[in-house]
Image (cartoon, rainbow, N blue to C red; front, side, top):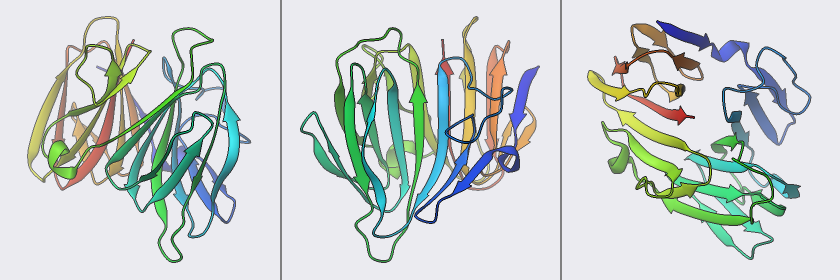
Amino acid sequence: MSLVLRPADARGHANHGWLDSHHTFSFADYFDPAHMGFRALRVINDDIVRPGTGFGMHGHRDMEIVSYVVAGELTHEDTTGSTGVLRRGDVQYMNAGTGIRHSEVNASVSEDVRLLQIWIEPPRPGLPPSYHQEAVSDADKHNVLALIAGPEGSGAALTTHRDVRVYAALLEGGTALSHPLTAGRGVWIQVVDGQLSVNGVALASGDGAAIENEETIRITAPERAEFLLFDLD
């Protein structure tokens, strides 16, 4: 079996007061040459944004960015003219491409926002910038792998340029799922909350795991659990 565990307590951590962030891979001032990403997956940041604060207008280029809101509400604005409010279950996709500037603000006076910010390397530079968001309810993810992002023709809620499929699941305790792994591809699992067993290996909240050279990934939840699964070229 080829499964490499990335424990939650081994991640990078930055607390800026307004933002408390855990970095699965190297990001900003956190640099670990052993954890620069996994295949096309470059960033997974588990962020807590405090009330009345947020990410001011800032820019990106040549990155596909997926944001998965766990709790709270974020107000979005960007230079494509898109605006919106992201709530629990909402998934945001931005293709930075030739350049995009955006902001996300927690307008609440009392409630934190928690989200996972994910960066995926595009198949080529210079793509046109774009923005989309979709709602994926808890019911949509209940005891199934819900395809929230993937390439054109995949049937995903959001369309990516990269040949990557991002699934979200919310499992009740005692539930089991399996996912076939095509030869030459790899899977990353990120636990949002709860506990999982992945091919017999225990994962807890905040843990990640890279899986390659397996035909099938078997996932069981001893208790209620939420997680993301990335199937990567």
